[in-house]
Every structure is written in C-alpha cells, then in structure tokens.
Amino acid sequence: MYNFIRNQWIMGKYTPEQVQNAVTKGYITQEQADTILATPQVV
Image (cartoon, rainbow, N blue to C red; front, top):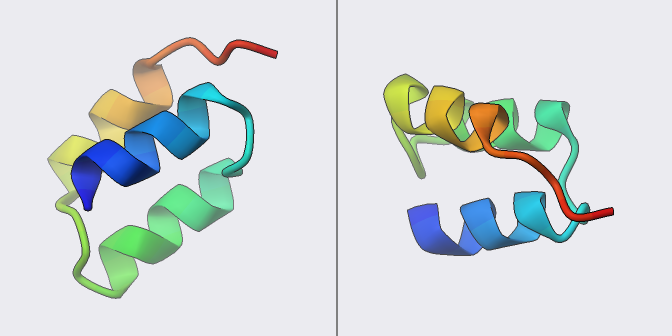
C-alpha cells in the first residue's frame, strides 16, 4: 500500500490530508507518511 500511496502523491493525485488518512486507517505508518510528504511531486 505504501508504494501505491507514494506513487499517487508523486503524480499529484493525493493531498497531504489523504496521506494522513492512510495513517489513520492503518494502511501505512506515520514514518512512511512523513517520507511520502517529503517526496517532491511532479505537477
């Protein structure tokens, strides 16, 4: 699930709120979310 969310983030399809929702739902850890959010988006 981490790779999917990361790819969606990079493509600009996920917002920071959606990434945090994945943490809340238990799909990824907070550490993974922080890594995703630090990754630049291709917009």
